Length: 139
Picture 1 (spheres, one colour):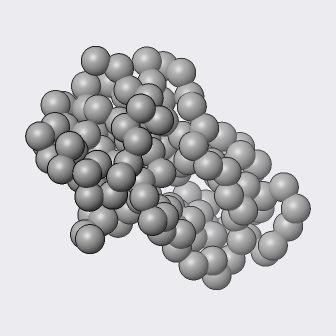
Picture 2 (cartoon, rainbow, N blue to C red; picture 1 turned 45 degrees about the vertical axis):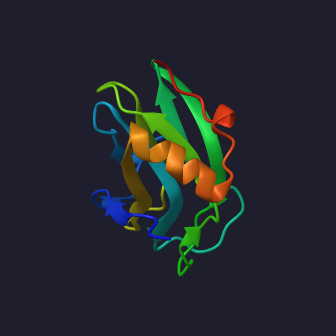
């Protein structure tokens, strides 16, 4: 199954804590799904260096997954979608770094992302047995 394409944010050097590394706003009247993430960093492995994939729904940040930040990590791709948002022009997906980056280290993150027309989502759910009730979105 085609899980979309990798969409990467800009590079950040030594980002401050809670810097938005990647942001994707689903197209209005479509459903955006995130299937994975790839956080690229020059950080050495250290306790407490984490990133967070969130959905911002009606100005409320909802954490989806928290992950370690370290150099040379492979991309993570889930079997089913990690999160889904209905495009309304306001709500969005984002990845932030929770702790400030070490001086001179570069950080970048991509999300494996795909959009569907609303009519396609029912077909997708039937194929993957997704429980659409677990995905928060507002009308």
